[in-house]
Image (cartoon, rainbow, N blue to C red):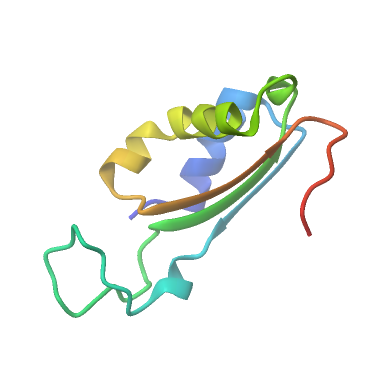
Length: 100
């Protein structure tokens, strides 16, 4: 449905991150039923609907975790409204440790 490249491009434009990782995790959700779907056999895992993003950007300095997530969600609003089902976000300011 959506590509990793599209999400990466939008996040780069919105935040000019020092570090960015976008991973399509859709395949990990094969067989899950999405409530809004019109089919009953479940999700086959082939479409870009589940993503994990990790980014480090100056834009996050002084923002709470909730406000950082809101900013990322706003940058990807079109994708979230049109079919991205899940978005895991790790948004850090420079110097803050990333999860491993």
